[in-house]
Image (cartoon, rainbow, N blue to C red; front, side):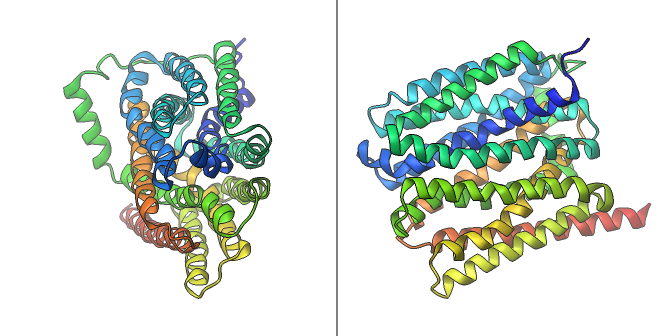
Length: 400
């Protein structure tokens, strides 16, 4: 009898996908503290996040074809093992440079886990069913994201910033144990040509030319970029500008994923009724509303907890709808090389986030405006991409 029951699949997917927000969110309350203790700059502090995400995105270009060739299980074991070791090394860092180096290794190892999770969904489900399963897994991710902020604030405030990285190592070790014990290979037909350079180049070209992949990957990347803008800037705004403590910031971070979880639940209701294109169009309208409202309040001189969080709750609700739809739909056309398609999707997402982090490192000016303007910008981009997707869907329906 198989150990991979539907409930176990959702749980494992939630833990695998949850490794990303835990890696980014858990140590955010400690970011100002570790920057001061390691005598680093704000730009270096942002680099501990942006360099990790760039390594995360780039590594998936390697992990994806490897998983199509050798299967998901092997890649998960290698990635989680490397993550556990690098997280342990990171907490022993004596300088910002050392921390950045180990966070890069951490990001590369994380890429194996998150990429495999998205590919596993395509291995087991068709796109519409995959979107519903992905929404269930991402609801679990939202719960972990809820807990990360308060836990990070408590650990950093009580025992120091190193304990936030220790918690990451422990989480990865537990997940590694579950994969060893519970995970069964989902790739039924490995592709022996997946690592041949010519074949790989043709596969990449075929994927990036596909309009479905391109549209939904860009939409998911823009939505994640709005979230990343908040993650990268929020600790400096709430702690450094608005004067909240690490524990209070952790509570703010606890509240944010609740709206995201609500969005993933809404996604499961909306997709069967509206279809993918109309569902993401509705989410895009909410992204635009939240982003523009936040930017408008900042431009008019409002700088408070609620002028930031209320609009961002709307944006995060939309993000909870967008992510299951875009991650499933972008990989949907490629059942024979889902790992490679998932890798390219993840690479685009992290490339956009890296660019945003680089801009924020220079734009932070002691106010909330860079954060608010960044989220507002991505709200507009999401709306434009979704409008194109809905128009293309309408044309296809008329043609048929």
